[in-house]
Image (cartoon, rainbow, N blue to C red; front, side, top):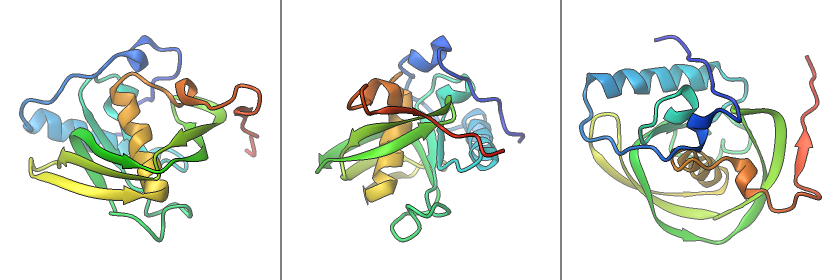
Length: 168
C-alpha cells in the first residue's frame, strides 16, 4: 500500500472523535498497512493515527525503536486497534511535533508510564506497560483518536510553541 497524504491542522477531521472498530477485517488490515507505510514514509515519524489520513476509526501505529529517544526502551512495532489507557503514572514535559502540524513543536506534559489495552492487527487482545518516549508517543497517537492535537496540550504559550528550523 502507498503512503497516504497527512491531513494538516486545521482540517476538521483532526478534531473529530474516532469510532471504535467492531471487526478487524480486510478493510481494517488495509488501513493498518496504509498507516504503516505512511509512518515509515514520514521523516522521523514514530507513529500515525487513522484520523491523520482522514479515517475516523480508533486505529494507530507506533514504533519508536528507530528513534534515538526510544531505542533502549520499546516494544517494537505496535499496531493498536481500539486502544485504551488503563493506568497512568508520573508526569514529565517533553517537546513534541506532529506530521499534522508541520514546522512546529511544543512542550507537552504526559504521563511517564502507562498501561495500554488494545487489539493488535490480528485481533489478539494485548496489555502492555510503556514508559519514557514510547509512552509519550502512544499518548500522542491516542490523542488523535479523540480529536486532540499536541497544540491542545501545550503547557505554556509563552515558552511552549516554536517554529522548527528548516534544514533542507
